[in-house]
Length: 212
Image (cartoon, rainbow, N blue to C red; front, side, top):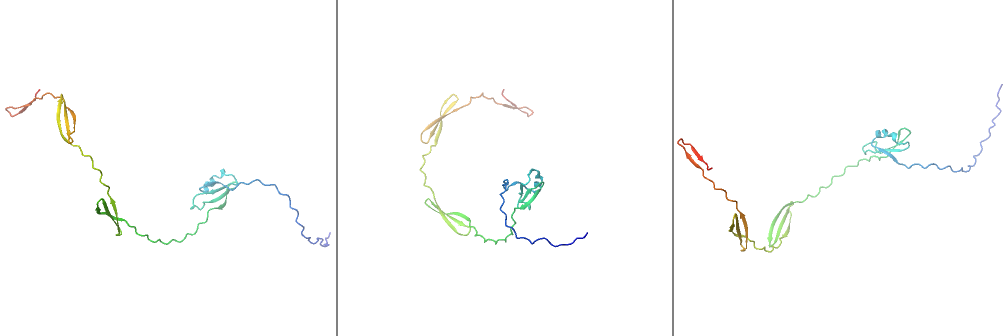
């Protein structure tokens, strides 16, 4: 059996057809959750240790300090593990040049001494000498003398004026001729004491005899 080519029966390519009518609108999908960071961790190790407690599709972030290269890294929980999304920390700027040293400030002026310069009546003038050699003065006015106080009353004499039993009465006479009295209660008289006697025997021994 033999095969023979009879010719090409494929026709020429036709022109592009018109665009069809728009199909009907599809059903609205379910509302998605807003972006939110579910949890934050101080280290990646702490994040991985807690992966069982984070649902799939939730975002977490490393929050430590600006010196940590992992700080501000964003992850999303995959089917089993966390997947890195982006580093949200800004790039460190180039350190600027050191500023010029400021101009030295003016040296302060202190007080070296305060001295009394003069007294006129009730006004006293003081001089303030400063550490830079300059000075200034100020005045202080003393208050007026107060009114003269009443004449004081002193004691001109104390005399025993009476006795009653063991109570002695004394009278105090003041410099303004007024008087006052006070009492002194004496203790009862004790029994009269005897006298000790001494003797020396022929051998020169000294003896004392007390009264009974």
